[in-house]
Length: 141
Image 1 (cartoon, helix red, strand yellow):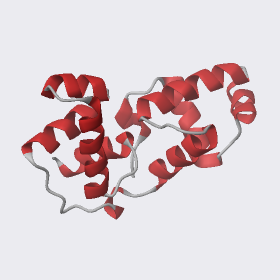
Image 2 (spheres, rainbow, N blue to C red):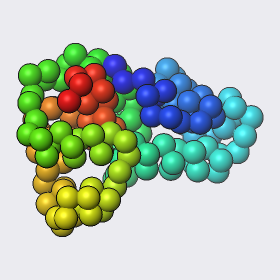
Image 3 (cartoon, one colour):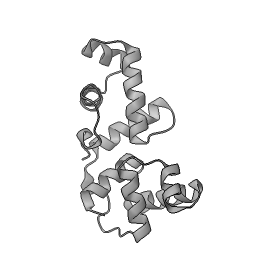
Image 4 (tube, helix red, strand yellow):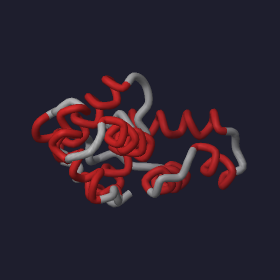
């Protein structure tokens, strides 16, 4: 299972993640629990979602985040092997590089990098950049 501490979140963000994972509280309930405003919670969640590479509706991002933090790492394939370029791209994703930064590094277009990352998702059985980073960490690619 992916640990939120693997991603260098702030202490407050870790508190928010813990409340989402353990209790699946609403933003309003989290704000009450932590003695802050709902807007502050939304700002923290926005940063968490961006850092985790989650896109789409708020509900989809929240469900994906919850899923990522609850699915054991051993439920993903361990026998996936990467080419040298795939391994380098996976490593750059895992340290938080954007598609544009990766494309610049390899002198290719952003759509090419998107295809590489999609291929890495398929090969490893993950759904997001965050899960890919956890997979790379767990399997030493």
